[in-house]
Length: 312
Image (cartoon, rainbow, N blue to C red):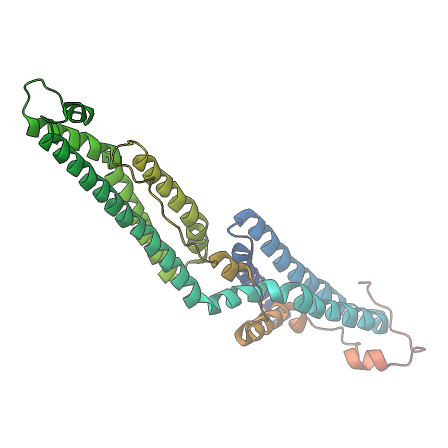
């Protein structure tokens, strides 16, 4: 029966040490902006450290001699366990809940960034439409003045080759439109909007790893798309009013993920509960029948001798 209790206690301890480490892993993912390998390494180290101290406590509790001296060791190790919990592990553990409390703010900022990037394509189409209209107006002026200003007519791209003027105009317009909005534009826009809408869904569903991937990618992807649009706007100097310009308003989402704060009430309570569950092997470990109890051993007269048994 004792072995069964200890085995069960060990399983409970390992499971909840792993759970504690997993929450720390999520915290590190936020703190280190998606560095998975580093986050796993430190989370495993924390879980192992807590469980190792419990293992040491269990071994000390099971001693069969030198009870008074080992009672002092037991108290020291127990205090160290508490200090490890309070000083080293509570903040990494609680940071996930700190970020979760900012969930609505973070979601709002990500959605704002997504909507702003989608609007960039609308603004570019407005920019391109303005230039197309200006170019067409210039062609119409050249056509109207072809007899009075033949050089201007030819400079606009027309030719006196017998081809109908409207046919030449349509060809020039098509070439100009293809420069500003080539076939790749539609492909990029469709892909970008699909990617951005998926980013919205990820933010709404609050999946930590997916969320950090979106945050790390959105600024890079948005700038890549903006540079593509600027390149299209510079592809022709005709009817140019300057290159396309757009301001990406990336908000401080990263700061929301990395800024530490005092642990929340839920984080403290859940951490204490996990610390106690991790201690299960220590709680269920039987002492030697000759052991008078931890407090009694500490208060025992130092001249009293422990009965000799097996060493630690």
